[in-house]
Image (tube, rainbow, N blue to C red; front, side, top):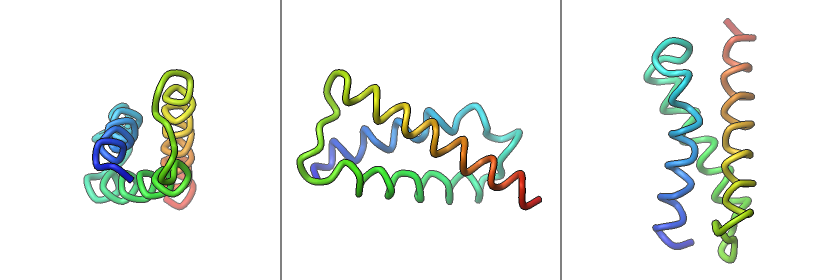
Length: 78
């Protein structure tokens, strides 16, 4: 996967996490969620995945949904 695609996916995850940090997640939790969700997206996008147009919107939505799930999971365990 091209580095630019990975970078774009990381930016999507970071943007999705921004509303939760620092009030709802700690620095360590932020790092863990960012890493886990980014890696999950890398696998789903794959080598030939596109981040153009409507596909980008779908990946951004998925990033927001996965981050929300991860934050919700943290709240449930505390």
